[in-house]
Length: 107
Image (cartoon, rainbow, N blue to C red; front, side, top):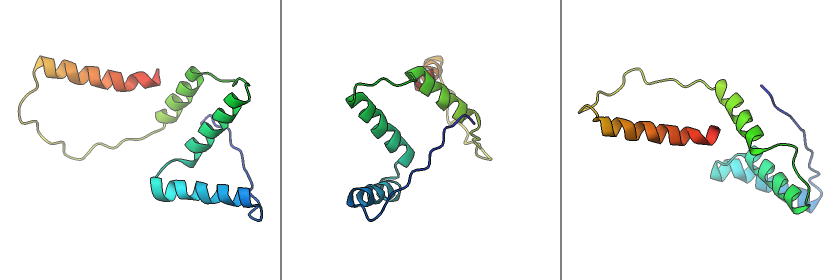
């Protein structure tokens, strides 16, 4: 896995840092949002505001997603439901197009 890990400490006696901790804890508890995603987005926004450029591109981000998804294991249901009616060629083409469109975001 190609990752960069960073430990961050928060001083809970500092009001701003305590507020940040409370917010980060609330992300996964209530909204089911990713703390990591929030921190990455906030960091990138701050970098943009300061007029600095990032050392990575959208393609770099896509590559990280591809690498992460390679290790993902997906289990199919033991028994797949039978189709009521066979799909027409148009339906198959529309389904294929929808799948390819969804995969476009990865490159």
